[in-house]
Image 1 (cartoon, rainbow, N blue to C red):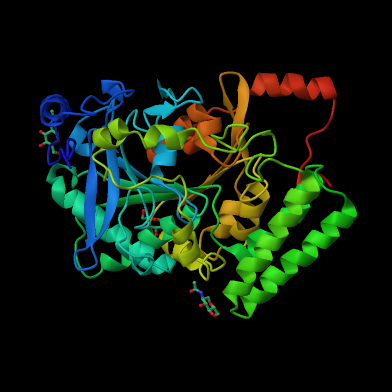
Image 2 (cartoon, rainbow, N blue to C red):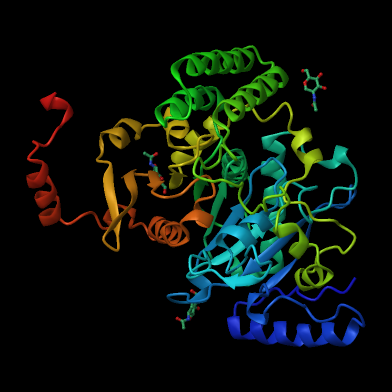
Length: 470
Ligand SMILES: *[C@@H]1O[C@H](CO)[C@@H](O)[C@H](O)[C@H]1NC(C)=O
Ligand SMILES: *[C@@H]1O[C@H](CO)[C@@H](O)[C@H](O)[C@H]1NC(C)=O
Ligand SMILES: *[C@@H]1O[C@H](CO)[C@@H](O)[C@H](O)[C@H]1NC(C)=O
């Protein structure tokens, strides 16, 4: 299999581009058939991509795709790198890459389109197919797939070490670990593993912070929020709410007695009930008539494009692998893990690093209420000051873009107009949020100007309400 884009170890974008062009030309020469990367514009090609060895003996390898920053504000050697992890368990990082926050995304027309909300505007951007067995990553047998969040943390550390060893020029660039949904477990896991490892050795990379979008992190606090959220969004009635609350109690009871297998099934029962009661196409975004990246017949528009031979060649992926957006045997390996908590890992990270938790507001599953419920359980020295600090309205271009609360190492952002896949729904807002968080300026995102607020208040002629005035 020709590996066309294993370019690495350079800090110079121009050099990378030159190498990419040379590699592209070589690929054209070497491959007789399927040699042009048909359907992919040259500008959409990654800076580098390929495989990182996780366990030589087992033959496990993690697939990665890296895009250099398109407009780094300064010296590339100081430009941060953002890692993105998909959830599932078992969903491919290429979902994020080609549907949410990569520089080019695949549309319903099965073509690549430039993404104005891309997360590699001012940062390098790394996608991983994690854990092994997911997407284009390689796990020779289902037994080679990790079965716990802790093992995922270890494997991600190994993958990152391999990536930075290949790219010594990147070692001065701070790494921000981000991800979505079930990555609410992975992000803390790799953060925690790295922070503990730092006490024994100097990692090849410098961790800068952790960010989780619409995450599942502490299920026993999160699952009980499903039913009230559905009720107050107007999706179920009061008797259905009571039934669903009972189902959620079963989940919590099984978690508390350590029967995570039963908890897994009880949650599936709850989710099935919610689907039946609401008729929603997806709990991930209550507005959608069709699930994300899905045609009316239920098939996805990403698979046909990612599985083209030309796409695999362009990415340097194993041609023999049939890519799936989410891989069932990986999900199955996590059967007894999904309902376990990584809250303690986040609490540890908060003593060392900035942590951002953000959610799109139309997600019924891992949305705002579900996340605030577990955030209320966080134990950390800054937590009461965090809750005491103001929750500000964030305005962008004259409209409300979100809500921001930030204090010390903890930040919380709600993105208006987004469901579970925030960068897919509100790309530009997600980009502004990411860049503000990494540059430490979340607290100074614009709020509605005072004069306008005064006009709004005078219109309604209502006094300002504070907890004290009630
Ligand atoms: C970029 O940063 C590196 C390392 O910090 C430094 O050696 C180099 O001189 C800088 N280059 C420029 C153009 O500032
Ligand atoms: C999950 O746990 C149950 C009971 O503790 C056990 O019987 C089962 O084999 C486990 N399943 C997996 C996939 O680990
Ligand atoms: C926040 O993180 C910094 C390191 O960035 C650490 O020194 C500090 O102790 C942390 N703050 C709290 C309250 O844990």
